[in-house]
Length: 541
Image 1: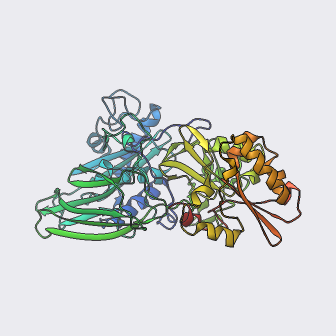
Image 2: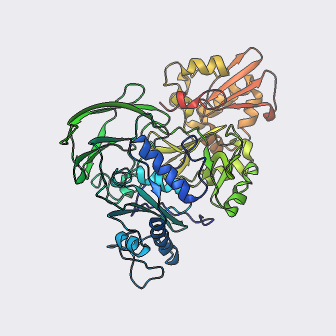
Image 3: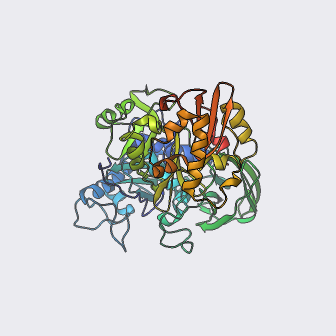
């Protein structure tokens, strides 16, 4: 469990970034324990890659649980350098072996080969698996066809995943090409923080910046069957193309890891986009030589609710209060905009909704909860910003989150409200849709403002606005100039449409009935966000 008021950056074996949940419709409904949830999740990824499913093994799980307990008893994740999260020190509480192999032996697991993955995340089995797969070096092992069995352990100080095989003599497989994300895979992380993985796959790019972000990794691994061994064998890649749904091909970083080749877009991928991958190459094997593959995957969408899956009475009680949005210490969770209700399956509670928090498992510190509480919850109440409509995703390389009547983004260590309507005006046809569907007028130029200060510009425009839309004027002028500009920007245009007046600010749209003068008569419209539009289509490109 996370400690209220304490923020800890996630670290995955020894430091690995994460790509959290969005697990709806991806096989988690049958999970009855953290180990079941983790197994279901890793098998989801292995199935998507065309690799054999794993089975839980009691003794391998004992080894994993022992190592996770070592974290707990020593109140820290892993050992300081030069040791790692995979080491234990003899004589310390909970010691069962210096290495993963020694701990598996101590647990009685009769292996021919064994591996271990570790994560500092102790609150979500799914997040731990997602984070390990959304990497370079760790994905190579997590999706290897060598493994047949699985063990899992988790405490609040960290998670351990053990992968094993008891009999290597029975390993008979075919030459294969393994790709990830797999064909048709959805919910693919759009972002990867390479400097939080050890070893660092991109050590020379912006060294020392843990928030350095690139696109989620796309990988190709090749395996050759040379009985009695089955090995990774490096492929010669002749062509690799990654294309988004608009036909753009992002620039790419390329790295190799243990026979696998990885590509990462130099900027985070678009959320909710369909990407097409084309790869052509060859490798030395018994059956397969050349390959030419084309497939698609879809990145994580900002507007799909997270499904919280509490598996103990304490967590169950915690999330039952989601409807009233009681503070949880380090986040608030809202179900009101999820579009579906909480439900039970096999005595398991599932609660869909959106989190507002200061720290996101994928993007690090955001500060969104503090800002939300300052202007959206404590000060004016939830209706001020409305309920969250999305999870945190990356837009133009920075964390961003949609609310019913506002958007937050973090730039340079501060939370800002982007000029949404200015961005929408740059997209073909969007201004026409805003006007015809929502009665928000198109942007216009104001040549008379040339050479004027921002105070002079705002004063002139507000004076004109007061004549045609007095209710909107009364609503926005209840805030100080600094707060008003931070929330809404400057007024851009105002227009009457029958009995309705539409007003366009840089960051918000407003509507009022002709003749209304009270602030309570104002309808706020967030351009590009639900329920007026499908914002994933209008805003994210």
